[in-house]
Length: 113
Image (cartoon, rainbow, N blue to C red; front, top):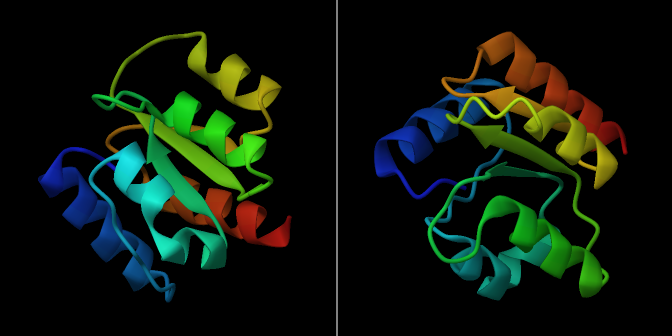
């Protein structure tokens, strides 16, 4: 999930190239309200989105007993992000642009949870 459509398309193509099904959302609120969220094996979520950011989305999902393994991504160079992701139970933090091998490894880890 990313609010930037070009990033969303690129990530979607990359994840599909790994052999996984993809459902894309342009906002945290759209994701939260989607019936498909209950079928998700994992989420790839941009931290910095307008409205509901990635951390808030993760928190709301946990509060509603939807513990979907989550990979957080961001183009921001905030050195605190990896620690925060780890402390809230995120699978991984990946800087954008996402490296294919790193993303694939994070997805495999998420699916093993």
